[in-house]
Image (tube, rainbow, N blue to C red; front, top):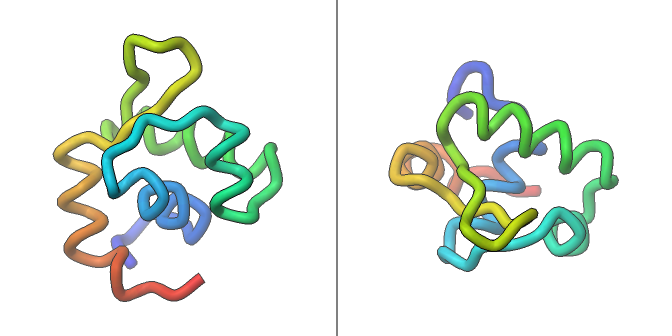
Length: 79
């Protein structure tokens, strides 16, 4: 894993990698993480520029920088 990126963050990146903007509840369902873990991961990923909010309120998508992090390291991780 990339230094400083937690497993929960990689799980969120992995779910967002296909490109569909998703809401927190959908991220929670697809990752199997708690709502609190997903919200914390989303906040950290947004601060680092790896994901961003989209025009539809409450939806998140992966950024080019986040995709690069996922492609380089994230695909090798198993959850």
